[in-house]
Length: 571
Image 1 (cartoon, one colour):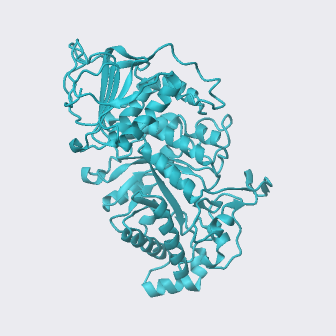
Image 2 (tube, helix red, strand yellow; image 1 turned 90 degrees about the vertical axis):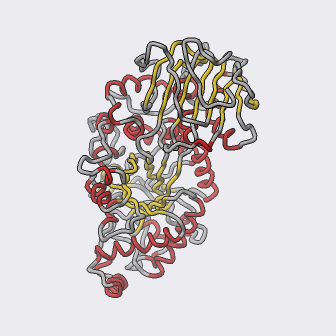
C-alpha cells in the first residue's frame, strides 16, 4: 500500500493477506466495494453515529488475529503513534492480540497489517475529513490531518465489537459482555466529513465539582461521537474551580460552600448541611487539556463576568461595588452581587485571564456575560463615574463597555472572546463569537452583524432539562428536551442568507448542574441526547433520518453498557 493514496476495490481485493491500512493522505475516491453498485447499509452491521456523509456496504469482514500487526509510515512520529494508540491500546487490552508496531513496507503487499500513514501535504479543504475502506483482506483509513485521522479511527472503533470498550479493572468490567469469539470489522467504504466545524458540549463544574478522571471520561465520549469542543464552566456564584496562583483565596475560599439547597426548597430555604467544594490545580487542568488534545478535543474555559461572581467576591470582596461581606452561595439562581467596573477589578480579571491563557492554548476564551442584574451598578458611585467618564447611556451600555474592554485584552493576546447572547447588547468587535442560548434570535442578530455564532437554544440543547415525564425522572431544573427534539434541531435558521448562515459555526449541548450532583447523573442527562446532537452537527442535513438513527442507536447502547456508562433508555 505504500507509495500511493488510492485503493481500488473490485470483486477481487488488491490487498494481500489480513491487512488493515490506516492512512493520512489524499481523500480521493476510486472504485466501489461491489461491481453492481452500493448496498444499503444495515444498521446492526454498521451502527455508526454520527452517520457518515457516504457509506457503501461491502461483502464479508476483515478478521484480526495474532498475525495482525500495526505499520506506521513514520514510527518515530509521536503524534502519529499517540493517535493510533487511542484505538490500539484498548484493542490490545480487550482482544489479547499483540498487534506489534513496525514500519510501513515499501510495497503494497502488507499481509496481516494495520498501516497508518501521515501525509499532511495533501490537506483537503475540510480538515476533519477521512476515507475508510475495509475488505476481507484489508482496509485503508485515509485523512490528510491528525484531526481527520482521529475521526476515522473513531468510526473504525465503532465498527469493532462493543467489548472493545471494557475498562479493565473497573467495577463494571466484570458485568460487561464477554469478548467475542473473533475480532472482525465488516467490509465497508466510507467517505466522511463534518457539516459544522464547532461541535461542543458544556459541562458546568462550578455548581458541583467532578474529579479529573470523570472529565476524561466525558472527553472520551465526545471523541467517540466526533464532537470536538468541551466548554468547562469553571466559575459561578456557587464555586470557583480553577487554581489562580496570584489570587489563592479564589480556591481557598471561593471553591467551597458551607452547604447546598435541598431540591427546590427556596422559600422557606432548606439546606443539606454538608459542605461541598473542590478545584482543579493548574497541573491537573494542563493534564486534562493535553488528554483532550490527544483525542482532537479542545477544552474551552469559561470565566464568568461581570455577573455570576459571588464565589470570587467571597474571596475578594473589594472587587464588588458594596464591599460585602459575601459567602459562596448555597442556592441557585441569579444574584445581585456582581463585579464592580473599577480599575482594580479590571486588573484582577486581566491577571486571572493571563493565567487562564497559559493553561488553555485554544483560541477561544468564554467570559459568560449573561444574567447581569444592574441594581448595584445603579447605586454605585464607581459605576456611575465610569458611565459619566465614558459617555455611556446607562448601565446597559456599561455592561457593553465591560465586555469590550475584556475583549480588547484577549485580542491583544491573540485570543477570541465567546459570550452568551447578552453580550450583543451595546455592540461588539467583529472578532467576538456569540453563543445563542435564549432561543436562536440572538444568533440570527449576531450573524447579521457579521459575528460568528454557536447555537445553544434552551429548547433543543439544554441537557439539564427533563427527558421525559417529570414524575418518573430525576429532579431537573425544568423544561422538556426529549431525544427526538434534539434530533430535530436545525442549527441554521431559515431566516439567514447564505452569507449570514456561513457565520453559524455549529452548536453546543449544555449540561448545567444545579440538580446534577454526581458523575452518574451527568451521564444520565447527557446520554443518549449527546448522540443525537452529534449526528445533527456532523451528518449532512438531507441524510438525517430519525428511524435510521434509532436503529443505529440500539447497538450503540451495548457499547455504552460495555463502557459502564449510565444513560437514559430511549423510548
